[in-house]
Length: 244
Image (cartoon, rainbow, N blue to C red; front, side, top):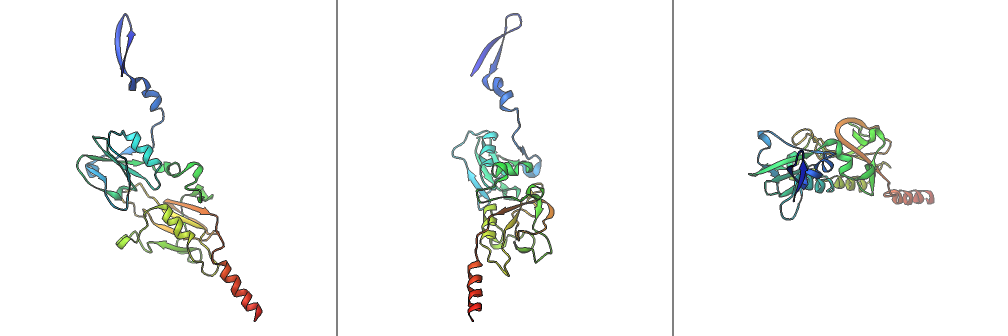
């Protein structure tokens, strides 16, 4: 839609409606950037576990795809073509060659916003207080505090060893069988969006609540209310011992 507006000495200037509302619509730039350079030309979110969703139809603008990605758990990347097809995925490691597509990356600083208001990633877990849960992880080389790491070494994803989403990491911690009374009450999740297929993307670690978290760029740490899993069996054993 275009409007005709008088302008200086009877002259008329045509403005599109998009021009008139553009200032307010873009007052705050969305937290994403288009990836430039030969290595990112003709790349889209590949099919498979790392592809999270695809909007129905076409005709979408980058802001539309950004909003969809922002409201999709673990979405750190979206790709589009000239027809406005929007596909979302986890990170740069999920990109594959496809003519006509361009990738857009969510800003690392928007991680908390992407996964829920007030730092909550779901109704079940939230950021730890240490450094607001950003750039910290379960301690390295402290076996009495760190309970597990998935994958066990490096960032190997052979035969699906690596988890796909932060919620899977939460479930791994929640369902961890306590050993020697040590429950998994904190977990850290590697995002590392600053490098292509960052070396710690989707690395999941679990540790005890009193762990001294280590600083590590690209990791986020969370905690949650722990149930009494494993305690009932211990109590029964104690009762048996007392009766003997």
